[in-house]
Each structure stands twice: as C-alpha cells, then as structure tokens.
Amino acid sequence: MMFVLSSPSGAGKTTLSRRLIASDSDIEMSISVTTRQPRPGEVDGEDYHFITKDRFDQMVKAGALLEHARVFDQHYGTPRAPVETALKAGRDVLFDIDWQGAQQLREAAHDDFVSVFVLPPSVEELERRLRARAQDSADVVARRMTKAADEMSHYAEYDYVIVNVDIDRAETEVKAILAAERVRRLRQIGLDGFVRKLRSEI
Amino acid sequence: MMFVLSSPSGAGKTTLSRRLIASDSDIEMSISVTTRQPRPGEVDGEDYHFITKDRFDQMVKAGALLEHARVFDQHYGTPRAPVETALKAGRDVLFDIDWQGAQQLREAAHDDFVSVFVLPPSVEELERRLRARAQDSADVVARRMTKAADEMSHYAEYDYVIVNVDIDRAETEVKAILAAERVRRLRQIGLDGFVRKLRSEI
View 1 (cartoon, rainbow over the protein chains, first blue to last red):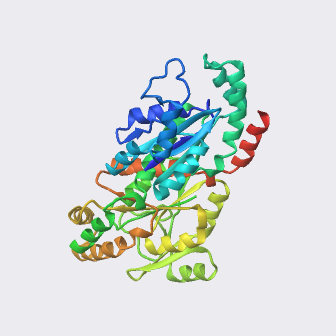
View 2: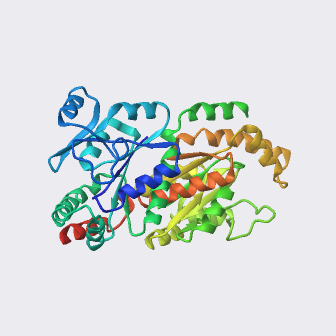
View 3: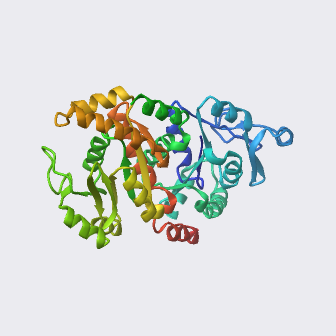
C-alpha cells in the first residue's frame, strides 16, 4: 500500500517516518526530488534527491513524477519508478509529503492509499520544536508557523489523525495503523482461494 | 465503537476476545443471552446470560435485543441496554457473535462498526481444536465442522480478516486494528475544534 504521513513541520512526522522504516523491513521510504538546496546534514539520495530545475521540469514532462508541488518557491516531487517497483514486489511505501502531494497521490492510488495526519499537541510546542532546529532563522520559523496553519487546514482529508503529545505513543499508533491496514480484507491477496480450499476440505 | 469478532468455533475467537478484554480497560464485552443450556464450566452472567425461551421472546418483542438469531435450535441475542450505556460513556464494546448477528448489528450501528473475521490456518487444525474440547461429542464436532464451512462463507462481509496461525500474532493484529480504529479521524470527537484552536493561535 501507499502509506502517507503528513503534518506541519515540527509535528514529528520525520521522526515517526524514520522509526517506522527502521523497525519494519516490509515498508520502504519514498525519497522525493527537490530543487531546493540541501540543509546542513542532509544527504543526497537519503533525505532527498537534490536536482536542478531543468531536471525537475524534464521529469514532470516525462511523467516520471507521481505527484509534484511548489512550496516556498522550491519544487518537490515523488519519483514514480521506485514506488511502482516496490508495490509490484508486494512491499509498502511510506511517503513523507504535504497535503498537495497527498491529494495528487490519493487520486493516483485508488484503494491502496492510507493517509495519516500528525498534529502537534499545541502551538507553543510546535514553535518550540521549530526554534530548536538550529539552522532555521527567526524569519524561517515565522514562515513555517504560517505554513503550519495552512497545512493543518487540510487534516480532514486524511483517514487517521494522530495528536503527537508523546512521540513513543504516536509511534505505537502509526505502527498499529500499518499493521491493521495490512490485515484489511480487501488488501489480502489470495484470501478467496484460501477460504474456498478450507470449505471444500470439510 | 462496536467491535465485532466472528469466526467458526475452534478458530480462536474466544481466546482472542478474552485477551483483548483482559488487556484493555476501554473496551468491554457484550454478554449475549441464550436459551441453550450452560456447558460445563460456563458461568451465567459471564459467558452468557442463560434465559428461558419465554424470556427470550419477551425481550425480542420489547425491542430489548440489538440482534438475535437461531443456531442449532437454540436462540441467541445481544441485549441492547448495556451496549448503549457503554457507547454513550465513550467506551468500546466487543461482540463475539456469528455472521447472522454481525449482519444485524452492522445495519444498526452505521459508521461505528468494525468487524474482524478470524480464520483457522487449516481444516486439520480446526478439527483438532474442536476435538480437544472434551465436552464435545464426535457428533457435535461433525456438526460444528459443517457449521464452520457455512460461517466461513461469510468472511467477505468483514472489514478485516486474520488467519490464526499463531495466537500471539493474531492477538497483536486484533489489538492493532482496535488501536488504529481509535485514531481514525471520523471517530475522534472534538478534533475540528482542536484544529481550529491551533490555527487561530498562530
């Protein structure tokens, strides 16, 4: 399935994504492309694929992106090929994207789409977490707070909502959603045949 | 929410129900009424409320049962009052009922209904588990096997399906479904107000 985590930055989405990927070998991260510059500590091919605007435009034109959006004058997108390869192999894919990306993916994915929105417990806590990121200037923090209000206005488009009061509890909830969605009847391939066989043997 | 577990007898539903109730104080068991005789070890008011056919008919007539069905010449039903009391108090209710009961509850419950079907891993294992119940004669085992085939024909009416290969794994899956359904957006009361407050404070 396509498993989408969205939230305003600072709500804990990235930590939750990393913990999920680290603990579960049946789900892999979709790594977005972006035209923005790497921040200190970001690794090309791990955090993002950092590409030029020309390359980005080429990918859009070639249909090589499942979704793409513009945020703060920079462009972001999800490469199609790795997602399709993983899904064909029966693996799940985790997307750490915003509401614009989620809307486009939802349209592309049909039934195989599960979306989770992570909310901060309070505005104070959100601001505290954004300030704690040393690389973000006061100006960037203010801009991200405004963007957070915008992002949060889309929470009602998501299947599940987690209020991240405690990161360990939020992690348990995200993992429960993934585990539950995997035993959803419609997602279990071969179930019809299995039940038919059971019944025929009685 | 109303949380329904169905399965052919011998598939592990009762063990799963007991473990869920024992580990989670926010969900309580719906105790059915039945006109059948208690089996050795069954406790009135714990396993079932054992009642007469007259009393059963009175309850049906008074609308005091959320659902009722006839199985093997005996009658079973779900008392309405304790369920409504629990749901009004914001608690979840677990139902250990068959497909006939589940169909009727689904109609009554609308959105607040989550259903899980538990399948045995194989016919051999199902038969082994039924034989292991000392109180069941060969005749009863044979009759239950036939009923199992009938029960299993309804698995496609359920939201989730668990194949009980390993009871501990099945328990983890049932608990994950409950945890996930609790953070489903539509089930979280007050979320709109919470997000409105967050956004207004930015």
